[in-house]
Image (tube, rainbow, N blue to C red; front, side, top):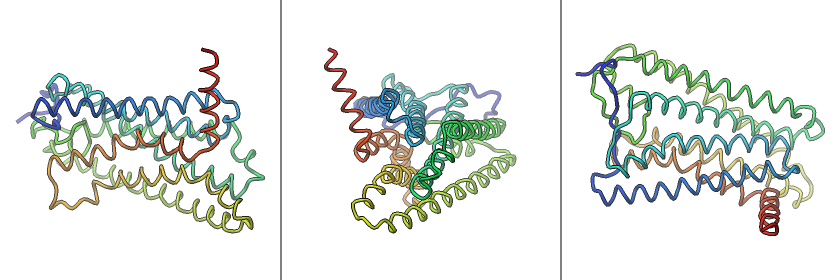
Amino acid sequence: MLNSSSITHFLLLPFSGTRQLQLLHFCLFLAIYLAALLGNGLIITTIAWDHHLHTPMYFFLLNLTLLDLGCISTTVPKSMANSLWDTNDISYTGCVLQVFFYVFLIATEYFLLTTMSFDRYVAICRPLHYETLLGSRVCLHLASAVWACSFLYALLHTANTFSLPFCQGNALEQFFCEIPQLLKLSCSTSYLRELWLIVVSACLLFLCFVLIVVSYVQIFRAVLRIPSQQGCHKTFATCLPHLAVVSLFLSTLFLPNLKPSSVSSPSLDLGVSVLYSVVPPAVNPLIYSLRNQELKDALRKMTTRCFQKQ
């Protein structure tokens, strides 16, 4: 029996006990991580380089790519290091930081996606008021509010989780530190405080989901009223990348809760956790670059100019 004061590290669940498979896991995660760094880095550089992209939509997209970089960097490098060095431990402080940054970045991304749906609603449904409602100062205030609220939210979750006594060992059934897995190690009834936070989180998630749905209902109605079919497709094309990212984010986020408990197994749980923690940050740049003509043109122009200088 251990208490939280005697725990100096936690044990993470490895993807495999076989050395060859551990190295394969390292190579796969390295490829995904490099792809995420390259994709998100190109989008950040392109938006910063092209002044034509200095608009509210791309300002929020810049924030989203920064969040994706932070999110995948919170979990993947430690998992890669453990596989490479054939270990599965993470320090107590490292676990605290991992929980904080993961919750902080995921919450910020969800709130930001909600803000981006409002941006698309104003741009399509109220275009004459777009500059007034979403000026540069308003966008900066919205982004600052999203980051600040998520910071406090993550701080509250992390402080509440690690204030619990851990007396059920220190082995986590996950490849990174995750709050539900940490709660399983607690033997105190005070974990009900964290359950209340989870209930509040569910309410916030539902509220943001409702706001996104309402925004897109209004967008669909406005798009269907456009007389020209070409204009209809062109207008809706600006929403497709955001809609695809929201769908991917929500589907992977809720996937663990939809999985039947009867088919649960450590290997399946690991696979599901990879889907919601690793795949979205790596795939989001691809979604935006393929479905956004302005971004593709700016990226092509930037790369062409770089090669000409060389």
